[in-house]
Amino acid sequence: MNTGRHVVELYRGDSRPTPRQKRARTHPERGLGAKFGDKGHSKLITSKPLLQLVLEHVGYEAGTPSEAVSKRSPLISFTESREIALGFAERSGKKSLVPCEYHEGEFFLWRLETGAARPVGVGHYVLHFEADGADLARVARSQLREGMIPGREGHADAALATLAEARYAPEDDARHAVELIDVLAFVESRLEQAKAVDSLLCENTLRRARRDAEWLVRSLDSMVDGPGLASRIPPNPYLTRVGSFRRSSG
Image (cartoon, one colour):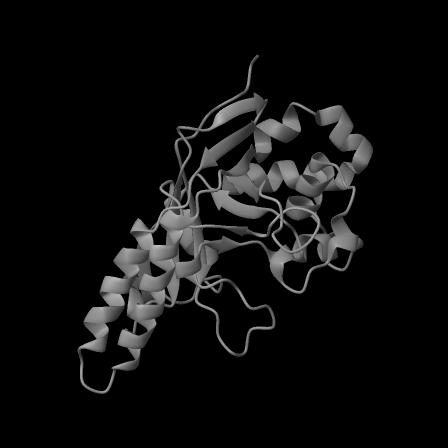
C-alpha cells in the first residue's frame, strides 16, 4: 500500500489559558485537549465521516456552518514546521517570542514524534502508546525553582499538583491511541470524494494544508464518562513540551 510520506516530528504552538478566554484550553502540563472538550458539541460532529471533518476543520469559510464545526472539532492541528507552529501560538505576529522557563511561559511549543505510528491508509496513521509522566516531572522542577523565590511560593503548590499528575501517569496502564492525518496526502488521495463533499472546502483545505504543512491528530480513546471518543491526549513518551516562550519586552 502506498501510504504517502511519514514525517517523524510534528509541532504545535499553544498559549496558556487566561480568565478572559471564552474557551478554557487544557493547561500544557495536562496533555493536549481538542476544542471538542469544551462543553461538548457532539451534535455538530456525530456521524460525520473523517474526510468531512478534515475538510471542515481546515477549509471552513467564516460565518458558515463549517466554521462552527471547526471551532468544536475533535481534531488537533499540528505542522511539520517549528516556525509555523510558533506563529500559530502568537497569532498577532506583532510580538517576537523569547525562550523562558516554564513558569514564565505564555506560549508553548509541543513536539509529537510519529516514527512509531502504523500506516492505515494514504496520509493516515495510528500511534499506540502508554501514559508517561516524564514531561510532567520536568514541568514540576521548573515550578519548584520558581517557588523558592520569596513571594512566589504559590508556584511550589502548583509543582506539587503537577507531581501528583506525574505520579498518576505510570499507574494508568490503559493502552492509548491517536490517529494522525497528513492533510494534503489524505485529501489528495480522496480528491473526488472530497470534491463531492464540498468543492470550496476541498479547495481551501488543499491550499491551507500546502501553506501550513498541516497534520491533524485525534484521540481514539473512549470517553470515560460518556459515549464517543475522548477529547484529550494524555501525556506520553511521544508528546513533549520542547519550548516555553514569552513576548519580548523590547
